[in-house]
Length: 606
Image (cartoon, rainbow, N blue to C red):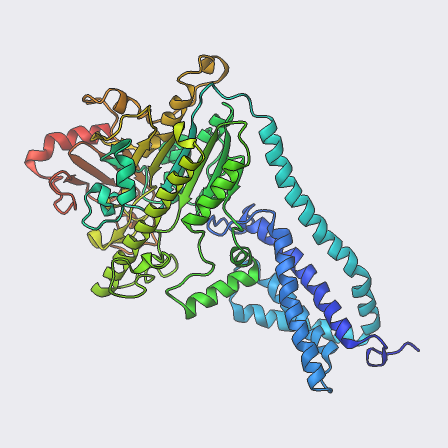
């Protein structure tokens, strides 16, 4: 007769640790595969916001292992303190329950109470079966544990080495770049409205460094984004197309119909990289990594790695309820984005580089690091009331002012980091032949027109963004361009900078289709450009917005002229503003007799 578990000479502590390890690796591996399928491949859930990469397949079991072993150690300690605690039986209740809870939660369709009830029922069935076959089960777990550990190890090595080989292969296949091709650096400050920069006349000193940079380059007074939120605006800056042309206008990733500027520059010998502070939408899951040999978005810290596992997502949700004016995990700050960018720049000098950096520090919740957060406020830690997950709360005037103060403090922080990136370029001698473009993807509302945040309308506070082009010796210093332009002009502008001296360009490449022309004509021939195409912006309908938000009713499109701004809504009357004399767009002149001729002209163009 075989000895029972209680009579087995094997120490219970070792058995508990082995059981915890087995269930952790199995639970985590399945979890990682499902998370990869759900949040990268789009199984069940099409959300872009919570994307992952195949790395999650080994990251999930690693974090589950740490979690389960911590509980196992507590069980062992309890068993040592209270001799009568049957810790092995307790382990057979705890770890299967956690495993079932993990797996049942993965479709993200059931409430936690339902998940816990189902998990408890399955655990009870397994526990009863274990009591009848304890020796067979312990033997099975013991024998299969090395194989399961090997699977996780193979996943880790193959995924990480696969990423390295893919980048190495792409670098090896780069052709020679055109002679004297400039390095290219694009800095996009997510959610930065132009009128909150002292560079554009704001009464707070939010951008002294950007002002100094603009004096050395070309500043566009009226740069307009193609949309009022991240995904379509970034897709336009990468493809040179409007949202209805590139297709990434809603929760749809950028498809492969049109080349990105990164792909085009690779074909001209550039090594390319993207660095994202906004991993919600400037991300692989959104399709915006296409064209970048190296792309840094997810897993930027231990907290972010944990936050993309199941238990991390639950922790983040609970943390947000108890700490509503903080964030978990902490976003990737501009200083970290800069550091990673220069580590990548310094890693190779055989080809010119194209680096596209996204800074997320002025996006809600407005929580810049100290001392910037309180730079303009009497409150120690202002801001944090407006979040992505709390819809549109009613704020007191004092709370709204806190939000503005923290937002402006975030601008000062990013302005400082932009100055730091120019210092790093100068230290490396890269300032001699680097084209730098500084802009934003969209603006933000702080009660303007009764609105909060963005992605809800096309007023100027949401689509007017900064735009500065810096290229010593090539662009004139201190030039202001008043002509309204679209940030969708970036790809044409960058490509012209690269191929202007490359006589073989047209012969070996099909010219890409851009909706917007290169901006270079506006600084090489700064005389009047009356025929310059007027910038257009677009936004799809969002019926889940509050009823007084314009996009609630239907899709929007607008066109910005030198004096007028026309907004069309699918189901609402048009809005027409003379923004030169009414910058806050408070007086709708769509029916004004004196504006009829210009209204008709812009409407026909749109």
